[in-house]
Length: 247
Image (cartoon, rainbow, N blue to C red):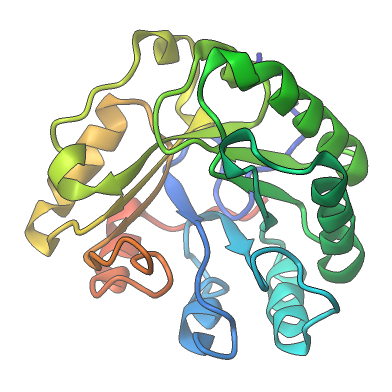
């Protein structure tokens, strides 16, 4: 079993083993109030949502983000703070300081480690980071945002790995790394932009075949902001994935 995963941890909003959404970072709540409100709609199969205040927690608590974070945590949903590993070029002390601010100010339940390195050489450093963040959280949910299949050793360093993040044109021809077969679908995340409405069923089949239990598909195609807003077919994909089961 993964180093940080325990049977006692809940998979927020949706029961373990069920497909659900991981929202990698909507726009600031002041700019995207509808998006943040949708996350707490009853029955939305949400595994987690990422809060990114200002490329991190910011210099001081943001009142709009405090309100959005409070709504999610009061609804029993999992909120992750956004931290940037910069493909291994991060400053360890700064990263831990930002993590503590997220916990102190926004009461996050874990962290989304964006731009996580994927090669074997960086594994020891990433394991040091995830072990430290686990201690900061006193148990919590950690997601490594590789965006591609990393070296297999990373599977033991976090609760979930993002093994695909990119356009639909590439996703439909993608394949899972053989080592992923040793893990359940709870362990993997796929984030895909530019998915046409007519290909939603195909996209969901690919996620199932590759063993990804947490997904976010959108018809938006701007690589820099595709995940910042709701997809045009949000209601449809929520109904296809199915209602969440509160724990």
